[in-house]
Length: 372
Image (cartoon, rainbow, N blue to C red; front, side):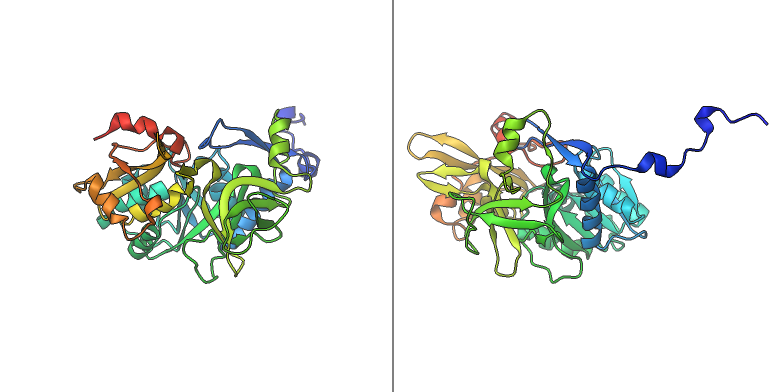
């Protein structure tokens, strides 16, 4: 008999799959919401462990059908795709997000999960196709990437009948760092608890060696086997991001609750300082998102000669809705402290977003050119 060509010969699986868990697996690039994307080197262990823990916390099984437009090349590929494949489930991947198409895919494929970022849920709720969509197959949905308003959470859960699980993660840890266990009591507004075996803490803003007391904002920090090996070709930034004892700086301002749950306040780099007061854009966004005429909202700073910076709200109106800037500012009167209220409102036709669908606050000033 003639031997099989070399390309068709069976190679023992053990000879090709033996890898060092600490060896480099992938280089995941950050989404660039606050600066130039950086390449986070992720180990074999960090990728597999994060996928496994994500699947466990969300109760993924081989029966799951996930619809998502989260980009596969990004770390979301681990969160939404690889974590599902690990459990034997199916992923219906959209080339790019469109609310009407997402609703149609959920209906057509009897999806059990939808995974997205806050802006996607805002667009789904504002879609003219929503009333005709059949969402009864959904058992759970997830949201992360940026803070989301309680009004959006409630509206989606009421319409879909599925729980909307909040989560938090970043490229530097190959996926999630915190989320809620599927069958644990819900706590809207919280990003959940640390993944099993992972350490998460809130460090003091002026001394990272000390924990901030419960309820007091500080920097969210992570330590454990999911932390990146470092930034590719950037040892200086690596040293600034990872402390000698292994704690990773996330750049997120958060506080810890008494029950071990964490609550993200905002990105440190997005902080607005107005007349010496710290103003967090996400807090304003959560309030304005509750107005019935608001489809999407983002908040950024504008220069002011007296106060240094003022908060400006960029609002995309719901289709057919009419609302003025003065009306939206007045809406915040009893919902925000005086120094936190936006002083200006701009109505662009859309908001700048990254490839992952997250709003790019640093590009909001450009939206002034696209006002409607």
